[in-house]
Length: 88
Image 1: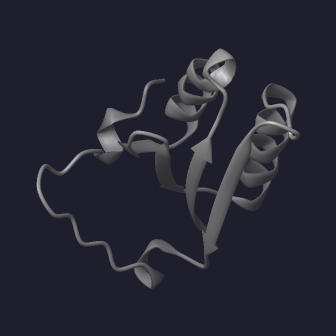
Image 2: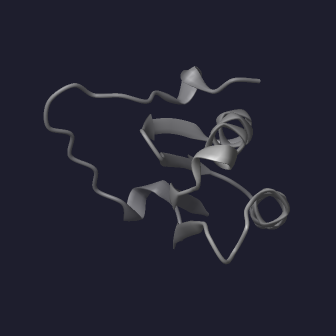
């Protein structure tokens, strides 16, 4: 599956969420990550994010597509985020 994750996180936790997602997905823009992952990896990412955030204060949206070919992406201006930019 291909996922796109967007978030709006309180300043106290935003760096922790960003650092974690950079190890799992490709950073596209501020507060936006995407990548091709397995079902088990999806569950691991989701559960890890739930451990980091405060659901009463933070917001994460996960868009799930069957594969990366189901997505058409158009970048205007400076293109950010390449698959090899992931922090391992």
